[in-house]
Image (cartoon, rainbow, N blue to C red):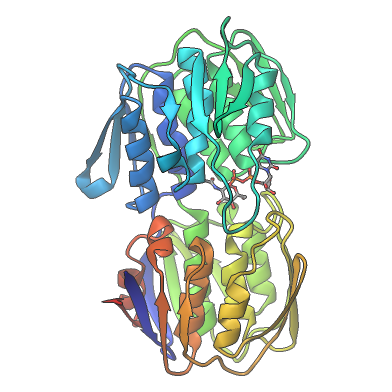
Length: 421
Ligand code: UD1
């Protein structure tokens, strides 16, 4: 199993290209199931989660090809051979549940394994289920699988979500494109990934209005066609690399970044004392003078501060002046990085969904372990700033969501390498 070794203390200088968004791509790929014509996604990120989604779609009979070293994903669902998303794949990646809506819409039934527990909390699928039921499907849980049927086809309906869910909004949106009549999704997620999915579906012929707001309206159509779509930039990768010069000092330009993807996060970073400037090519981030200031962060659905950047922000705040508070409001168990950061000398107290961080002057290198995707990159950020050497093990988590992290950071002067552990 690979590990990442970092020798901290070098201020970063350089430019980092931001990839296409993993979470957008994972929702766009299942949209292939809605049409028998080819769907081509450009600017795809080269990540193991994308390959896992490819494997899942392949198991349903889709043709999946990675072109241009994986930058382009070509999909064709001309002949589907299965409607069953197997536990062996779903358990590896929760986003697998996004085949439910498209399969139901196209084939009238689907059998999708329940994803089971995951490191950051219980994460049920009841809202996905609710979306399908409001469109006329019947769902039953048997043998660990959701068995969904729409014997008379899906029909439009009103889906009023009690809480905002990215995945459930995506599933419902995709299913509604081929349902008979009008669907209204209320309390819809507003994430850029939803907007990107709606744009792609519209290019395929879907009739969608209101994406990016809390109410999305979909007029069902009889069939969708193929399309070519460019995946939006990854705002979480962007935020992560914006934090790199913030923790080490120096200046990094994140190529392809823009403030509209990351407003709430950029405001907090600025409040901590980091300079951010929009350039023609992206966002330039620098830390020029002294320690950062402690801040108060509360995670929330978009346009709020993303839960997927909470762990990375904690790595910065570990060496901030004064006390910082991080409140996690999306997932109940998302502070596993805290004890690992403490092994590096951070002072953190966790009570329920709130972490209080008392900034220390400097972190110290240590062997640490990645527990999930975002936690693993938070440890790498901490290591970049720490005195001495840090080895982060279990980096397979990292490879699910960050392409070539060591190359991107090394290009800016970081001492970082991948080692076989
Ligand atoms: C997506 C992202 C993930 C991000 C999260 C929140 C993908 C592949 N993953 O996950 O990286 O952290 O949005 O921005 O895009 N919930 C229910 N019932 C459901 C579904 C969700 O109670 O059926 C709850 C969850 O437990 C959580 C909240 O709703 O507390 C939000 O989760 P949701 O937005 O659905 O997250 P995902 O779509 O799984």
